[in-house]
Length: 253
Image (cartoon, rainbow, N blue to C red; front, side, top):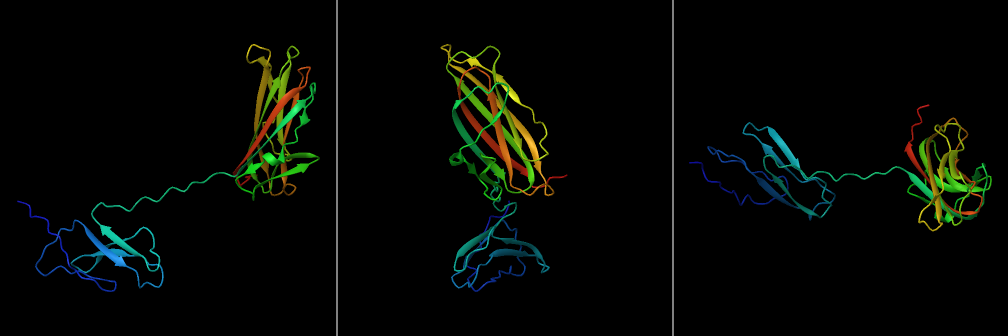
């Protein structure tokens, strides 16, 4: 028959460290141990711990609390085989990003030409003001990058039209940055469509691209621009949105 578990109590209290020595001739199968620490007299933060020492006098394990205890605080420390400390909370991180938008009403027929959209500075938002700001370049308000890096940019425009458009007409969007390294820069087009069967027409186009702002380029800030055009034959209402994310601070080239 297996021996019954016996809880050892009354080990007393004293200024740390407090030792409990197994009486001579006794055997112990350690299942759990707990110590309570009263830090009322601690002058600074401290890390309470349990230490298990073998019969040969060697330390076989030290089990501290997960975090230091503030001066004057109290804590309990427990040990049991296979008992683990609480997992550290995951750190939430996000890439620096910025967004800005604009409503242009009316937005005229530009033919095959693209025109710069000056964004609304009151609708600018960023989660990192050390990377992004809003400003104007050549009279066009937009997002600007303050530091080098690799940036992902995407621009979206939505056009609304309440009269039938010219046949084979379209809405066009193009985004670019004031740096020479902006691959995949090609305009995006979308044709007009009657969205409700009552003569309300809509077209939308999105353009995404990568751009690199290098330390050897003309020093930042660099600006991200959105251009749009339409040849419906009439004025339209244009909703424009521009978003930028800094993917890396390392430019690689």
